[in-house]
Image (cartoon, rainbow, N blue to C red):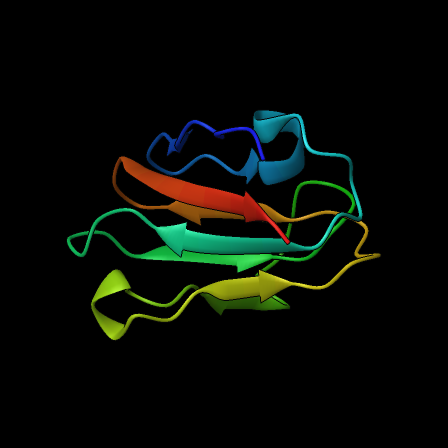
Length: 91
């Protein structure tokens, strides 16, 4: 499997994870926040989220857990209040 560079998240900007990685929309993903000093939220959505509905916090890396995005989802977006990065793996 090819190495996927970290997805950079500028402060207060929604980032389309599929577009940022070049992975086909609907592919199953495992997503990890790269730093314990940031807080990142995500939303499963085909378009940039416009409300706070269906926004979930991603696990802090100190927990050892990842956010798993199921195959067939319409999209996945992330946002942080500070500059952050994600590690993304295709499943």
